[in-house]
Amino acid sequence: LIGKGITRFHAFYWPAFLLSAKLPLPKSLLVHGYVTINGQKMSKTVGNIVDPFLLVARYGTDPLRYYFLREIPSDGDGDFSEAKLVERYNGELADGLGNLVARVATLGDNISPLEFDFGRDLLVNVREATPAAFANYERAFAAFRLNEAVAEVWRLISFTDRYLSAAQPWKVNNQAELRKIIANAGYLVSAVANLLRPFLPDTADRIQEQIRFSDSALEIKRGAVLFPRLG
Image: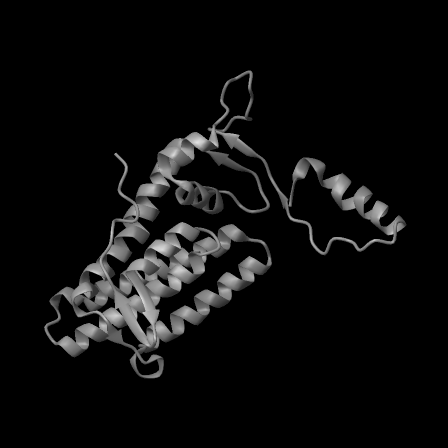
């Protein structure tokens, strides 16, 4: 894993040294681009250096990781802006993922645990959506296109939002139907948590504290807000 400014050494000279010493060659080389700040090259003279420790203290580790994974292509240049970080935090973490987990946890808290049989209870559209998401995610991951892998997780989050909006569980009075809707939503959120784990490990843990499978049952417990909105 290297920056593009030293590609020649690692792609040409270093393999030549290894070959001459009869040592094994690297199997892959991931070259990333440069990060600018608000469209400018980082410079001590200009004074536009960003301290990542201050950003972590202000926003948390996972939101900062998310910004870089989502905003910047794995093999290209990208720009950092604190304003864009806040925009993605509010729009995709707070209003997107955080709101989805809160909705499912709130709806399922009073009827948990839910017995769940994958063959019997998984709806056709849910059954089709999750393998496709996992397959696209794995292809992107294998090609080191991490931004595309993260985007695939957010497509699954959007699918789950649409599923809940169409099913409208808050209007369902039939308990059996309600339990089935929440079970499918919980299954989708659990899948999202699994896919997020390599990227946002703390967030995945916090989701699974609220929504998780255990011994063929879905356990749902309302917890703290994942991402409080920023003013």
